[in-house]
Image (cartoon, one colour):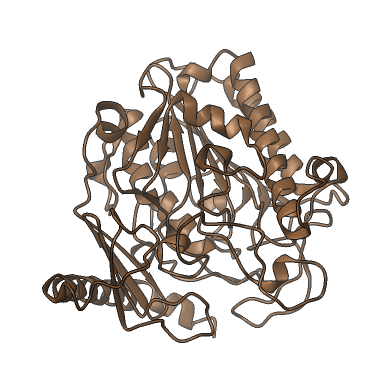
Length: 448
């Protein structure tokens, strides 16, 4: 093992709300293993995903770019010709591989299924998991029509380029078991490793074995299944952490955890046949959820631990984002982030030295919504809570320091600031659209 450079283990959950960890204040259930990561390092209060939906959020984390600059702006289709991320946009896996790291991805990909867009095409030496946006947890079949209108079921379990069949095994446990196996294999080599562990929980369908459900007999049904699914994730994190300890490499390993976006309220999250909104996940006191550019859609739980290098038991309030992980990890590994075209910034000083956020401004876009955080102020243009509904107001301005729930619109009280931030957000969005038209739009048009 190269003692001079750390290993990296990235945990990503799917549709897990800001409030759905006990270290974030949840009382319905406990997540002791993830809580231990927070205790040994950093818990962020103001950390952001790159998008309020799956595919662009993942693209931002892996590429260090805003989603529109990475070539993935929306939820990608699930058929086997679906395009997405390609080698023209380097990932952190590729950057680490280029400086001698072993790289592996286990779990959900959702960044393209066609050749050229799969994990092995984007810097990962090894892949085990599924390529579409979601699968049945036991049959590993993708049933859900996506943007292409495709409705036929598609089996979706792979090891590198080989399709596997393992019907009846629970996907969350399969991901954890394979992650432990890969840690053992990579540890045997004289090279550090990067392991991306992307759980599909607690994304629909809402499946969990009885042994997890039995831990929460008194919770209402929708909350009970959410707790059970996250309990299975937490157990898996514990197994992976135990393996790092057993191999005596925990102190040589950076642990990173985040959710990809806010909690879903889609009716398909429940299994009772009723088309009512689902309320199993929670964004705590934040406004909004998956798809929305209000805080509940994009502010996510985030934990980072590196014993001996990042001080323990920190709660950091500086606004940082998933796109910062690429340059930060590359810098930790001894690489040079300046060699890459990145929107993210190195936040090691924030983690280690109590430094300020490197971002004067952070931006988001989703369909006709655009948002900007500048200092403690947050502006949302055409902000929506539900996909099919109209924007709440054309422009919403909040002071997150005093109003993190975005309850009071300050546009009329602070018109000059609102105008300044609207102009900045609009100009940024125009830049995203220009880049998209020049670099990526044709790739998607060819599929329609």
